[in-house]
Image (cartoon, rainbow, N blue to C red; front, side, top):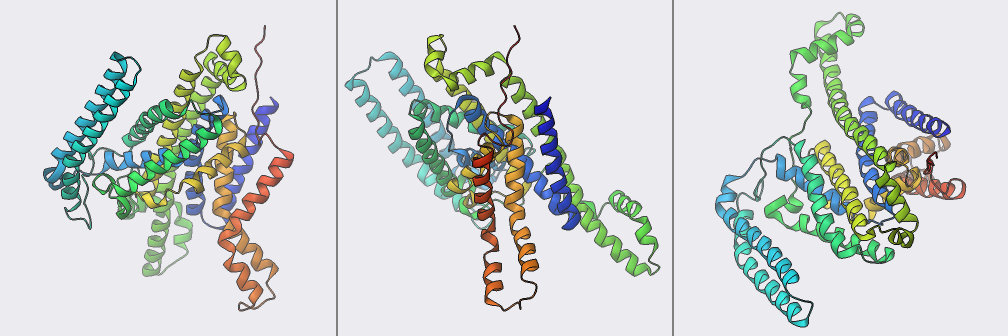
Length: 458
């Protein structure tokens, strides 16, 4: 009962903070913060499942987010038939060769005993296939990237609804997590952290530089989205009538027709942005609530108790006959796929895919801070951490500017101290984050909503 009370109070406070932004700044900003908080919560749940359930350190967060973003491009963009004609066949042959290589390597590993002869055979096979794939894929990629590079220069996608990319983003991340887990999960925790961070860098580098697939640093803009466009709403009679009905008392105070129409136009433009963000908030809320329900059921299921037992004492779990390596792989895949889902949601909300914005060190640890601040092992805590940290990240600069104006109201705009403080506003979020973490480590070392272990009744 006490745990539920803490959760309710915590989220009520967060709700009041977001509402205060709507009252003192604008509802469009408040809803933007809400949507980004919901997306961050999805990513935090993914990290929490790996770390909070099983104690697996995954610093490859941004790599899986990038894969989710790439899924949005592959699924929703219209196919570019000229690019397919120029080099599509070569790309398909290269993919088939990669698949054949994986099959042959697995066959050799299965049929031949471990020996130097087997290692040499696999090495020669890999070298031969790399040489062959480069000969075929290289010219194909150049041909694709030469097709109208200013606006295209890539294969495009499947032209499907972008909401499907949320599931595909999870699948992309899960497939890569399977490969990464097979390679890295046997490492000690500190080496695992380094390995996943480096692999994340490799994924992001691939996304940035493979223009034929993702347009690279040229970005993909104007992507589809599951919510209506503001311009369409502004030209829809039903929406204009809805806004006019809501603001009828304000409009009736104006007698001049031209002035009334202009005010209505301004209200429609403002309301269209709010309406679109509300649509996104509804979709994202459904995802977060669904994940929360599933994660809670998993946490208190026999499987969840087994994972916590493995986390707390691997040797004891192995002695009880549990396959620790396999369970670690499973939960690493699950957590990574949820992060990929969050990456696809983020690109859907932004409406553009910008690989240069994926900075592993910066945002990976921001997501980790969300989990640690909220309380690792607690799904409600992960969501709370996602809300709180992202709220601070966005609102730190406006709050800093407000405080500077209050404490320097008697100083001229050209005063050196005031100029210095204003120039430092963008960095105030780091100060806030550092102070907050220091207080948290001192007074709430297990997070705002620490993990609660429910004991089974005999």
